[in-house]
Amino acid sequence: MDLTAESRARIAAVTGGLLPEVATVDAGGLALCCLLWGRAEDPVAVLLHGNGAHAHWWDALVPALVPGWRLVVPHLRGHGESAWPEPPGYRMEDFAADLSAVLAALAPGPTALVGHSMGGRVALWRAARHPETARGLVVLDSRLNTVDPSLAAAWRGHMSGRRTGRTYPTRAAALAAFRFVPDEPGVAAEIVADLAHHAIVERAPGEWTFRFDRAVLELDGDGAGDLMGILGRLHCPALLMGGDTSWVMDADQRRDVAAAAPGCAIRVFPGAHHFLVVQPQAVGRALRGFLDALPRRRVRR
Image (cartoon, rainbow, N blue to C red; front, side):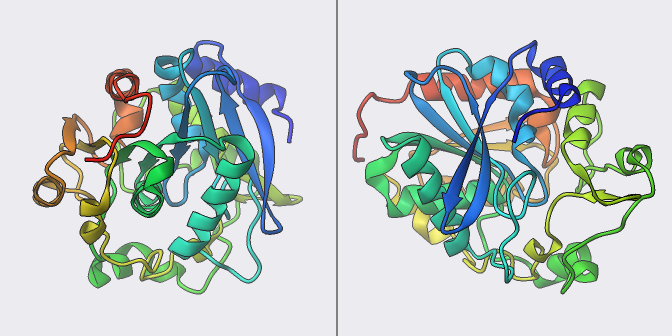
């Protein structure tokens, strides 16, 4: 997949002119599109986006990390430019297997793992089960305990059993329909334009829609349930970032994480669940500081 001229312009408006390479990884027959930023010889951080999002959600943080870090940023299965599995398969084991394929192809050595929302769950799962490959872990506003059935029904119930969403007759109408879920005021216009541009696609003439497979919105999430119990299995430095008004990972859960993983640093920023695109400079600086401080070799705690 080559970036179109408009795609390049939207990205450059957010990154100050930096543009990614694009690579495709075969994950058990499923084609995963990945963005690659920075120099190949630099240490690697893998950035995993959230549910319903795409790899360009990290664009605004790139200037804080490049040069200095090689960023491997996949569109997760069923999202963005990556393929949809047939039949639908969006369990934790599916995402973890895809991540293993991406790492084997593009980052075979120890890496830092960074994930927002659903991507944070996948990053934690990988770091806990393959500690020998994790240099560090950063989780951004991920719900780590069991999905609340009432919340899941409220946010996802109307999509249960469906794969495609509403269509729009024009590209302009689809772009205008782009929304943050949950809502996130205060995002810069150029970031919104970049995210919206990469979120939509024309599936058929006059049928514009959002790229992700709605089958990912199962009521029990990724099926992995409560991940709080595996925090104690981490053997790498860890950082938790959250938005101060987020209900996804609220203050109570941040306290639970601090108790379960006493060595985990915690940073809270103005904003809600999508605080990383509200405060990209501050979040980027904090992320860069954590990554730069990681030991050259993985150490066990």
